Length: 326
Ligand SMILES: [Zn+2]
Picture 1 (cartoon, rainbow, N blue to C red):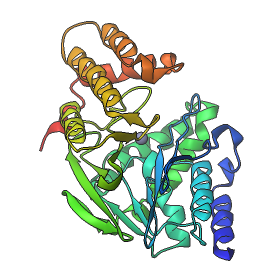
Picture 2 (cartoon, rainbow, N blue to C red):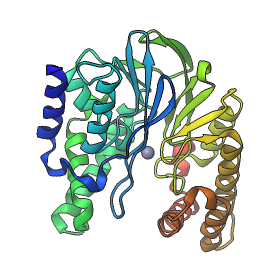
Picture 3 (cartoon, protein in one colour):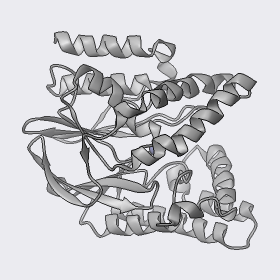
């Protein structure tokens, strides 16, 4: 237990600015079945989202899929890892679905306590560290200096900058750039790679024994997070998920869903893309999303509208087209 406490202490010391912030504490984990756990990411008003995580029990330890952005999420994960039998509060292996900071930032904490933890991911993070993430870090520094970032958002922006500055620590130990069936910590899992989807290369996990697909940001709530996406590649990736044999899908943001719900989400997404690629007013496109995805958006309509207004503009401007090129 000594190392577990050391892990929690290290987490608390590493990021005092956002320590023990009840506003952003991840809600309790949900048991998916006897050996799989779902830890939802939070998305507090005015702040950056935290991605969902999944913990799988394996013969040789625990597997953690996605590690979140904020300290609160990492503390929730550490607590669950300890409860599920990891004396150090760290997993035997980490799988990252993609390099967005709301899914990989926690790698750093776990690797700090347990350098032997193996990280499985695509190599797309290498391009991101010198491209998208470097650009957004520069923009964030400028905005912080200019005082244009709302007070509530500042801790996340500062936290992301520290994560970016230590970005090399987020990279995979085992690069998975094409589909691979592996035994990770003794548990068979199929790692599938989607090219040019939510990012240049997304990894999703098919757990055949549980008939479950853990798909990262191939599904997000309350809107599709299109910042680094090729919309058409994303649609293709969703078709691969639908054809996988999965009976349940764990999205990167939002609650677990069945396959008919996934079909409805895909329909609303594809309608939104078609609308934004067309000539109708962008307002019509976001209204279409709000209607088609109402069951997933719940009370979050205002934010869903603001996000789809923004992403509709991004699609129509052609700014995402570069992400579709080989
Ligand atoms: Zn995400």
